[in-house]
Image (cartoon, rainbow, N blue to C red):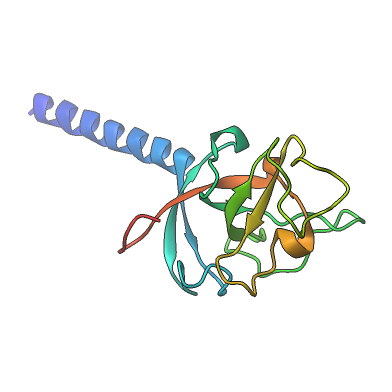
Length: 151
């Protein structure tokens, strides 16, 4: 009887450890809005792997906080369930890349620690209006729509 109890306890500990590791690496985000249409729709749930800026590639769909306004306040947008304001956009230029047309013309290259992001919807509010997004405000890279395909 003790062997079964010890085996069950070990199994529970392994499962709990795996759940903690997964929670630190992955998060589920619900899309709110149409900035990524037609790729993602309002209400889609997306699996996001936590990543640093140096782990992002051009073309990745990323989740990050919007830039701050000049007074240090977060620009408007709907808060997530955690109270933070998240944006889901596509990375189009990374540190050192040429700055795409229509973005801050005072520099030729994307500054270190920053990225340029666009929504797939041409009416998205993104780097074209807000400028560079800070890499230290990055949550991660969207891997797939839950119940759907990879992005």
